[in-house]
Image (cartoon, rainbow, N blue to C red; front, top):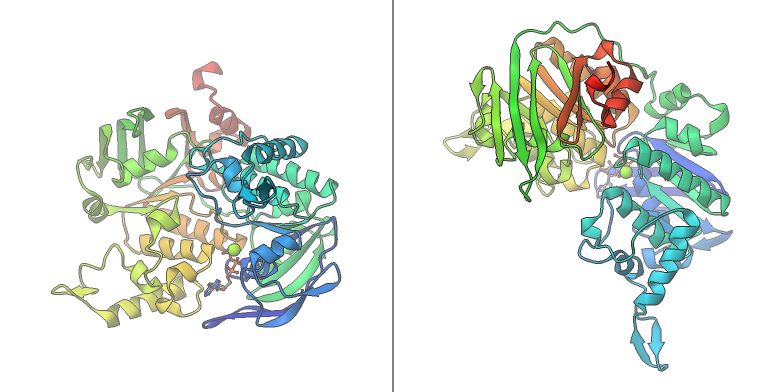
Length: 506
Ligand SMILES: Nc1ncnc2c1ncn2[C@@H]1O[C@H](COP(=O)(O)OP(=O)(O)OP(=O)(O)O)[C@@H](O)[C@H]1O
Ligand SMILES: [Mg+2]
């Protein structure tokens, strides 16, 4: 890619970027949220065309005008947000767009599902990507969906494989599995482009790493001879600290108290099973657990998103179990949900509107039922500056067009500014760059030190170990262990996460 520039309204997303990627290498791309990584790769995959610059594939200049044409050039991409049809089977998803190329009796176009399934089974076997081709995509977990995306590329005989933040949605075990697959693909002669925010992953698999900063290429580094600290500093453009400095908590009274909470799912199955714990003012209580063990449902139940529950939830001594979501917010709960696009934002509203989603109905944003545009604008200007939310047109940007990381920053700004006594953070740093993670952790600590109670739910054990004052480990809907963070090692927490009971140890 030579001298590539791409402009969106109000922003130069790529600014004169030149990179060369060699056959058979794993080439990582690192950069802050909004640095232009996805945009650059979307042009290689034919989703956008560059405003300036040229793309050469195998030495030949190409105008990649569509993903279909990229496919012809043997280029495939797994997107940051998957693009599968949930009502179709795995096979149907994989052949979607290729179908109808076979002809029965020489003239009738038809789809040979059986042959497709066979080829898929072969590919799965060769690369260790086990799937059941007849499963419906909507009923399989994200890590299997990702395998489907990879198989889809392989089925199309992709030689250049682009992965846009493939590990953001995976558990640690799934991540190491994916990295193995990526190595296997390299061994088979494929060329891999890997966008990720995780330096450890780059260190583990990548050969070279390009660093983007605000649309510009900063450097291309040889991974083996570059330290993680140097990569981090280059990408953020300042010295970042990879470890969190914090003083011991000074916990006060109980703010949140959960008693014998049971949360039922739609099949009346208790996904949270008789859980009790308390979060005090001035502490970070973190819930550790492997994905899918009830932690999300627990957070939803406290915030009021799930009502099929038994047990009690006290906020400042008052039972809030029967209050609706707005009432709970007003009582002092801030909530940063796991799925930012579905539950955290209205994607087609502007940034300014999203920043007042929970306070638009009262002063200073509404007066006698009329929205106060000036106050709303002023407020969004303030938050954008304070929380470093980057977008092309400030408060007027439609949230859908913002980069994933900046969408997350917007939610955190809105929720922190409610000044609630309890803040629930569910996976607050997923998909964020190191600089942004550092800022969010610092903000969380600041709120703690102001005396707020913080409930942190995270799949990242590193995040739990560095932020938590108290750790609760959840397994299969039950609390396995609750203890002060400094009394447990990472390995111990890991064991409880796998289902070891606290009394098994004695
Ligand atoms: N379709 C679009 N319309 C308008 N602006 C866009 C569009 N796509 C991206 N942008 C803007 O271009 C810039 C680069 O975005 P891009 O998605 O490439 O960032 P990124 O490096 O992938 O970030 P992240 O790590 O958060 O995914 C951002 O400021 C974003 O708001
Ligand atoms: Mg991106």
